[in-house]
Length: 468
Image 1 (spheres, rainbow, N blue to C red):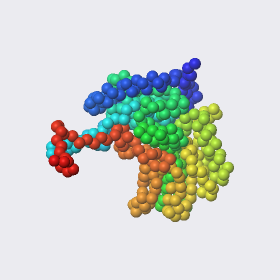
Image 2: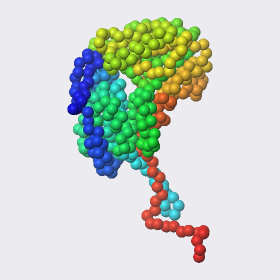
Image 3: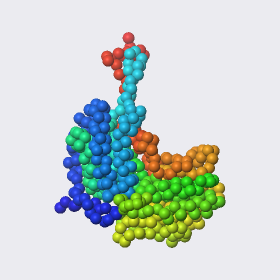
Image 4: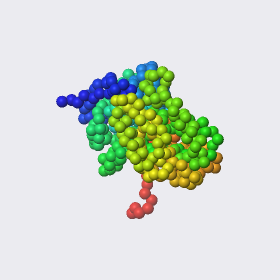
């Protein structure tokens, strides 16, 4: 009996999409068959098809934005920015591929040539998250296809409709059959896909627990390329700035954009004790004005619900645990609508308590007061994660120290912890990634370099150790 898949709108609870799990074996066999001819296509042909894909998305930008907003619950204005990121990924990938995975040939001795070229890996499994169900998987898919790989894309079981729509644009652009395929399903299909021997690479965005499980599954297959974009317990340090209102806005952008459902969201706010009262007064005033609502509400909300009631309950349990261990509530994290996953933005002072190193994936900010910058850095680095970190305030010299000593793959100054540029590498260390940053550097893991020494005719002689 085939299990039906459904997708519901977080803001209303109404089911608006139905589907069935895909046949992994059929999909992977077809993907392997398609790889031979696709990898032989000229780079210019692959690039042209990707430009056509971008045009397909551009032509339906309004429809895709509405679908993203409905399925994720994020504000419509934010969904529109995600669509633009999907479109922009093509030109970024073309530039990155030329710079980081291009081919070159130099002259060697005796008329020989030394070549450096790049080959695709084969069949790439792309596992997408629910918070950016189009942009983040697309950040893997486009450079993988450009390099000559075929792709099997499994979207999050919480956002299958967006995944289905994304693949339809590639098909409408004229990509050959089976070059990119959609595999619908839940965690079981994901595990089976990543461990299948027909897979040559796994490109994953999601939780650290799932990323660790993927690494364990593939420990005896070192030839399978893995790029893991995982979570973060990201710190934001506030230090010696007179711009308190700007600081409060930066904190809100860092902690509550996308309802805190960003891997780069600020989870910990580390504040100099002499600034604490002023910063908290400005922050709470701004938080109290934040509009939380459905994606199409007017006036437009700053943030919507979390993805579903399960996620909301997880956040509420995490919040209650912090409070029970001694956290002082500044603004409570509460369910705002019965039966729906709308949460109020929470703030808890956790200075005088034992803090767990965990990623609570939602709109909750933990505040820690410190008396000196050494203590601030120690606290910021007090995590096994290492994705994003930001310093607000301070001097250029202090930022230089922060940049040198902080352990993170994204380090910002007077900017939010989130909102990283697609024109730069994106990734972290520790539980946040496996040193294969994506975004502009995705070209690095979508192909592998091959060095060649070449001559048109064999020319060789042995001058030592041969009997005359």
